Image 1 (cartoon, rainbow, N blue to C red):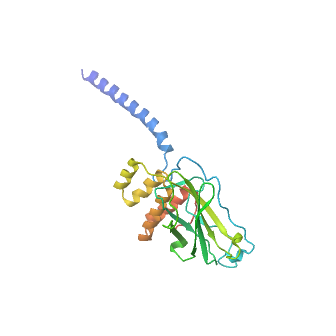
Image 2: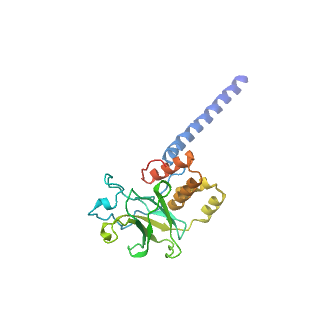
Image 3: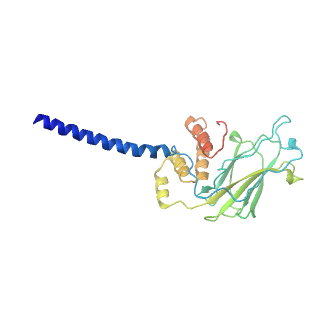
Length: 241
């Protein structure tokens, strides 16, 4: 009797182990395909149809920080291969300038047909880590839902000849988050919100909130590493702040 009971117990345990092994075999490939938490997940769609390229310069020294500096580009904190989403009709644009002697820069907004909607010229100022944050002001037109726009930053190297500008552009689309996403964000901590926005394609809210938290805690190793990881997830390689 004891022998039969032990045999049934052994057979039952073997069946359980077989089932668990099969489940693990199914789950493991799925886990391997998942991105680490907080990585930017591109929304449907691709890069903008048109972009504003870098201007040609006849005198590079007019824009460089020193006579020995090598030419550098403006860094826009935006996905280069995908259209970043925003939940705001007046989003904040983040970018970093190379060392420059220029006194002013221009922020521009274009519609999907590259028709100019807004332009403003602001002075070049020293900022945290050289990063500048400009929010689309009340004087500019609001972004319309489900419309794709391009925003561009130009360093005005020669005010008398704007063909010498150094410029770069990126794409943005204003999209209303779902009711489920709003509930999830309402329950999340500020640092959790950064990951939630990124994982749902809302790049501009994710990077802006991360930048704002860094201003409060500039020495935070966690935030600084998340900054580097976030930029790398969209193809931007930049030294740690």
